[in-house]
Image 1 (cartoon, rainbow, N blue to C red):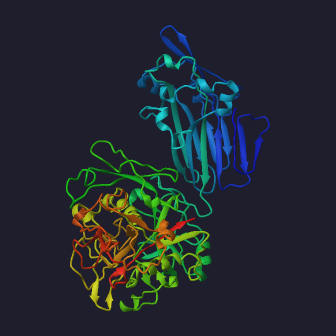
Image 2 (cartoon, rainbow, N blue to C red):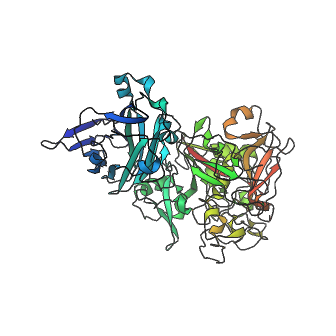
Length: 635
């Protein structure tokens, strides 16, 4: 018996004289849910001191191949040897047995093939078959999942209960993605755990295999295998990649796995906002089309939702702050909200915590788009021209080699960035995007990812102290300074009147990586820049509702509560405060009632006073050395 469900209209066609094929044709292909029902009607009966497990079936009709939308599931002949009929699994004549015996069983085998023209993602899981449970009236007789063992593709056996997802309704076997024409074959072996006792007598087990699949279309791209959530583009962001030969940004091929991004290789997803006049051209352009830098208004980097944990005080395998170790990270789906302590002493990583940055207004976020550079002032032709204390969203520009927008109060920073979405200069709809000044928790999310295997820390081109993000130390003169995207080619160094540009890919060797990208959070061109040095950056982090000199008016702390992190101490998980204070020797000082606004990143002349983990307090007033950063989320 096979049941196929779809959220949209479908048609089932059974070919004449061929009972081996069922085709399901979608009328609308954006999302599909394939439910393959396998019956495990398990009855455990006493046979002296042993137990036998039998499976009863409805029809034994064998459907060997099923086509659903663009995904085809094929059941191979080995299934019959393993006791299965098409999509059904038979545990007939099974006894409690040890793992070695269970893993030696004939496998239940099936293959998923993507026959569509676009990549697709899928999840394979086991779920209780409530329909069968109701039919058998055995709700109170269900076999404890902790007594069922499963081995997938010959891997280490696990209890089925260990595979339960956050909803408690699904037991996740695997998830992945398939490019056009690609296939994935699974071999599943299930048996009764050898430690099963009398408590399983008379129990039933009714389950179904569920395969959920979705094509990547309408702004979705193929995933990269890291588990990172697919970047959300909305209706204005253009996905881009860098062409190292031509030294320009190009429209990315989002259909090819790993082409646009690959977090396993520290290649974070990048996207741009272009002028409204050129948007349609680039939106319809083929992959590889050059994106003229003159048409780019804003550049962003995708930070996918993840959970983290820190071993000890200074990260994995480190005992000193000046050379901190890895922050362990695992990418998670939008529904996951791990609430562990965020730190563990030694051994296997535990106590995972999902950063606060991935919740906005009580809603979970799949990820956030972070300004690739400090925010610049569009019309500025020199340093002084970028010192403007006003709320003017149309002047926001986020790209390399522009003058950072400085001398602006925290209140004007807040209103300027909030005004980006909905401003005609960018063509971004407020119904699609939320724009806001970077919160301190969001800074922390970028910092932690950079210190993980997915960031610069995991980039093998950099060794030792060079794993720290390089400083932007450019300072030419009082009217030619604070430029975005510059690199000092090392973590801490004196100011320089030479700006090594962000895209200088020359290698310096000796574990020092590339000259320009060393100043990014990935050690390559796909990371976030200016997070060490350049201008001090105000972030939306405030001490106990104190206005300071920010120029906020009465009621601000209630009206803006979703967009400002409020503190009474530095002991907050995921915000890159007490958890990582002093890492790489960066200076730190917590906000207080007198200086209630947080600064991050430090300045161009900093040594210890610059770095991704640097933080300090300030008044919130306009200052010629203070800038800010933009964050976008999709509604």
